Image: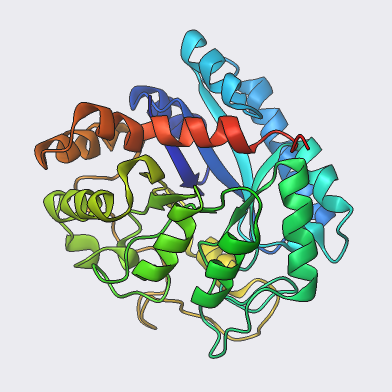
Length: 325
């Protein structure tokens, strides 16, 4: 089973076919960065058109059981998430509506301070806000997973501890392997995993050791070491693949409507767009390279199968349904 728990590609029939060639059974796709509720609904609508147009390649995913259907029918199940709480605006009642529409992950922040928590680019991390505590409770209730991929350290640790259900860092790597602002320190990873949560490893070059020149061996050894520290059962893949996207999309991701200036993120001012992917992972057809690389580290077939998809499957099964009290 192969599950990629974060992509934001420029979707097309070409990419849907590559998903099938790569035997990717499920993906979690970002459908909002800075969108309002109504704008996010338009993105749900766009995906409904794609499900109509390419019914032999993709299908809407809402529950772990949809991955079983996708596997039986040779398709990829598509699950939806947000990298910002902007789709819920300032209305806690919209959380249940968004879950009903198909949302399954929501970041509490995207780099900046939000109404809910602090982003990883802020100088001061004040942790989870008053509203954030209420939103965590409501997300727990309806089955919308808390994602802290772009959040600051204290906020992430507090979210892991406050949440009554496991949370996720869907796309990041350990900070001690590659010290990017968005990568996670050991105490943060520990807080998430010891509460039953998941870490998805990213192949986005700015988060790799050596960036675009990162080797497959280095990446897979890093995963093996992380498994030794925190348990292989809490680890998966979240590539952060942004295939075929124009630089205008990078600008939307980083800038949205919150600033008039260009925010370069972890890229340099001379390279604001997407950096080249490492040569061992260009698109969805390359998941076999990661699988073989993990096996080459000496990890067991069972551990590797979990990281490639089994662990996310179990996480989906336990966390997408409304909480039964």
